[in-house]
Image (tube, rainbow, N blue to C red):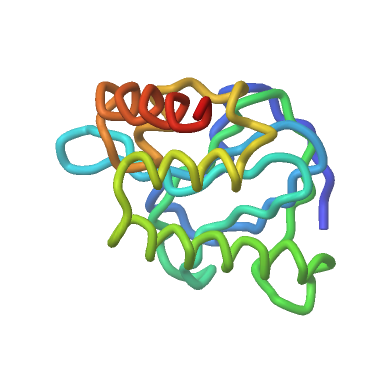
Length: 157
């Protein structure tokens, strides 16, 4: 394990890289994302303080995701070996969030997706640009705006 400080905007992992790592966030905010053949970003996950983020491929295979610091961050870097993971709870949390997200993307409306995002990431809603939230939810920024308007209207009732 190694503890490092990374500035906002630093890419910790590039898609296609070998020997990817596991990153545990002590402070700051990271995201993982892919870029499709048309050049569009698709955010896979956010990792605020206390969360762990990694690409799920084996360390000897090319990874699928980019991992970037969205804020100046202090992180712990682990090799991809389960015995080196000091916080199994954060890994379980990560798997749980991913599982719920996949189910949500298959069966939920944009309003339900946004509500789930707010519940899951309540501490980062104001820290992440709306464009990134839309990418994470798999909707256009315009659809997110409409979903948020409806969501806030329903919250006021």
